[in-house]
Length: 91
Image (cartoon, rainbow, N blue to C red; front, side):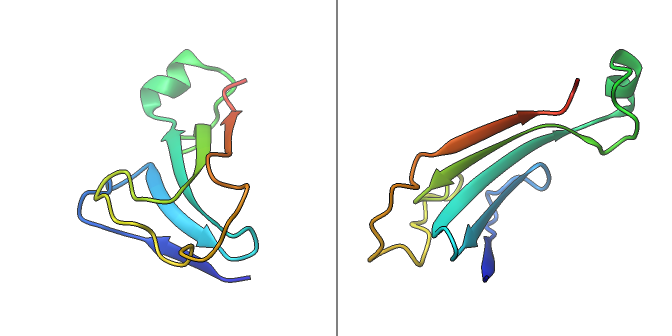
């Protein structure tokens, strides 16, 4: 399985990344909220700074930050576009 990552100057420095898995095939926008000291004080289920509180994954064709069409899907017709998942680890 090959995994590629997209990076651009407009992409946030943390908490957001884009990757491509040829097994699916699809580009996925991944957004996650990591715990801060304040989050640890408010939620006794969280144990460490940096723990993932929640994450959302959405299959996309274009980078939402720079607008570039993401490579590798020009000839692929797939049911994977627009599929999303949200995971809440705060409980």
